[in-house]
Length: 80
Image (tube, rainbow, N blue to C red; front, side, top):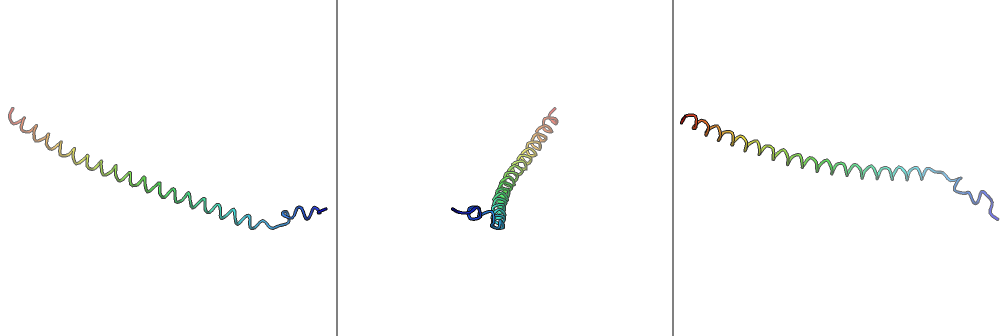
């Protein structure tokens, strides 16, 4: 019959390999989270750039409309 020492051999082994494996797994998880965050922030930056470009175009069109309306109102004012 096997002795308790033979059965419980794992309790006598060093756990440093388990610790190293846990660090490797943690590193891989952190790397995956980092890559996801970089991709997410890049996508948000592109969306912000698109929104800013549309806002600038809208402001330019608004300026043209205001200039046109001012010219028309000045002509109407001169006729009155």
